[in-house]
Amino acid sequence: MDWRVKASIQKVLSTFSLGDKLNHLGSRLMNPSYMQQKLQYHINEALIHLRRLDKCGFRLGETDTFLELGTGYAIVESLTMTLLGVSRVVTVDITKDVKFDESMAYLNMLSENHVRLLASHSRYNEEEIWRRINDLKASASMDDFLARANITYIAPYSVADLRPYADRITVCYSQVVLEHIPEPVMWDIFGESRSWLVPGGYHSHIVNLTDHFRNPGFFRDNRITDVNFLKYSDQYWNAWCGNDIAYVNRLRFPFYVRMFNELGFTILDIDKQKDRDRMNTLLSDAEIHDDIKSKYDKAELMDTLWVQRFHMICQKSGADVRQHA
Ligand SMILES: C[S@@+](CC[C@H](N)C(=O)[O-])C[C@H]1O[C@@H](n2cnc3c(N)ncnc32)[C@H](O)[C@@H]1O
Image 1: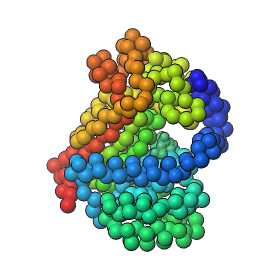
Image 2 (image 1 turned 30 degrees about the vertical axis):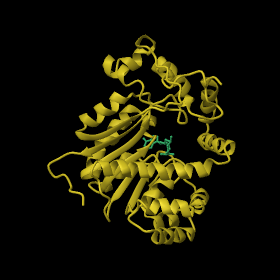
Image 3 (image 1 turned 90 degrees about the horizontal axis):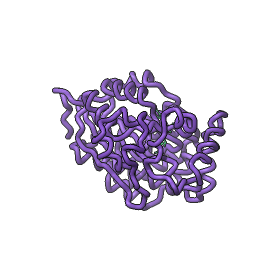
Image 4 (image 1 turned 180 degrees about the vertical axis):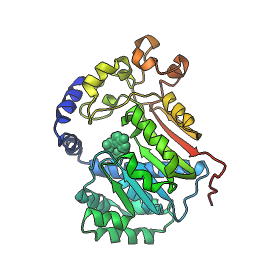
């Protein structure tokens, strides 16, 4: 199906306040295993963050506070982090989409296998994880759930809401969120992040650089490539996708390297990923619109065009870098 069909639907939905929720409900209804898949996905992704952080020298301690950018519809990734032993997770989003009944449904889906997996990477043993899960099952409301889980959920948020966390965040992480943030907002968030992070604190971000109209699903456009959206001018792209539901910033890999470097972070590790199953015919330089090309050195843009997704770990530099146990 032509990507403009999905873009048109998203554009219409975005014009009324319940549009994004309907879009989400549609995804859930069209896939009966949606919640099971989401649960497994978030558990896996939380483990991926911790594994890569571990590789970079981070060791989870008893008092670590993590900050998640872009909660989305499920509290699962923050919950997973707390079950793995993170003392508190502050999770923020520009829209408030987490629901109590869905959070309880995810909680009730946690099985012996999930808990065994969590315990094999957690500061807690299986018994303690079950004790925490069972305590959460007695929650009477979303606020009660969040309090019992040691999660602070701020949505909608602004960077000013994070100032009370100055020098308290050990790890700031995100999961397919940065590509949805406009460039000036990104500079603002990551500039401010230098004050939230403890000395030696980390950023761990997983970013999806692909044209999202290639994502699997009923509305997938099978005729386009993962970089199709780079063909269009900003004006054309924004006319179709400049709305709250469909927005992606189209920034390419070298942008993120440049931003973290310019803000003084030390990049410790980058995992650039490409899925063999996806259609990867790349665009020639001539096919990429000047609005995109003008932001990059030609070689750095073309040499990294293949990167579909990446996971980057950065560290707040400084003489006073915290020593992890
Ligand atoms: C594709 S969803 C990912 C949600 C979640 N991390 C996940 O993996 O399911 C992108 C999320 O980024 C959020 N978002 C967009 N701009 C943001 C910003 N400036 N700060 C934090 N989150 C933002 C959106 O509201 C949305 O929930």
